[in-house]
Length: 296
Image 1 (cartoon, helix red, strand yellow):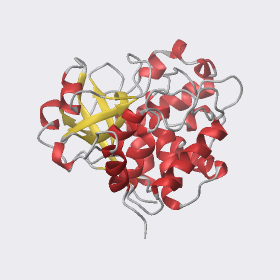
Image 2: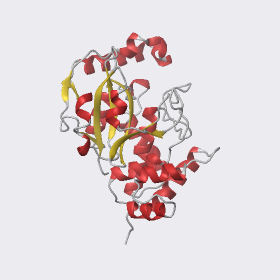
Image 3: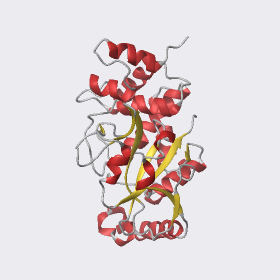
Image 4: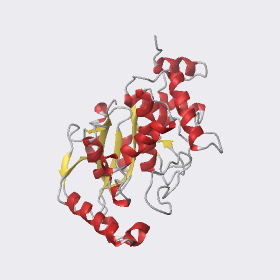
């Protein structure tokens, strides 16, 4: 019979004076268990699946698996624009450094493989492509899910996540989404007119639709219904943008905290403060959007 992961971590943590800690807190205390310096992406994937095997994660709830695997990347360096490589659009694999979105995508892909019992590099790549691209199919640059409200909607349609923001007390928001086409110099691929036009069509569709945001002041009251492994996106008042930052909720020491890859911190980290306090401190954050990963 498989041993509970929390039971394992709590008993292991007790040897270090860390009784009753969450998976994320135990792994944070023990250090980065997945990624040694200089490891290749294939080695990092193999080490992650070895961690999953040691914890007996096959068949467990995806949210708890996300907590375990995501926390194992604490300390991994932040890297901006990791997907913007020369040449045609292709699936970029980089687990040696993350921006906030690639941290979420890679952790979710690895967690889905671990839960399904498909611990291979090819299975990981298949899951990552399915998560990152519209309909799971690469059709040049515009097929990548650049805006996070589009990312959530597409992954809802694919049965990968469920948007629970409304259930938490979220309110409907409509705003113009056009940051990419109004800042084309920031995106190398938008020098191609066909890419620019295709992204403009995506923006037009997103601008015509409402999306749901849980306001800042409602985050703390909704905290008891937010689970470890839930994907949390920070909605923004910035003109033309839907979301400025993403990560995972983690229940730790009686509070909901934020596991994420921040530019400011320089590496993947678990917030010291509660998620509600973290969001409250960001002036342009209007609230959060919450998507719950579904068991594959």
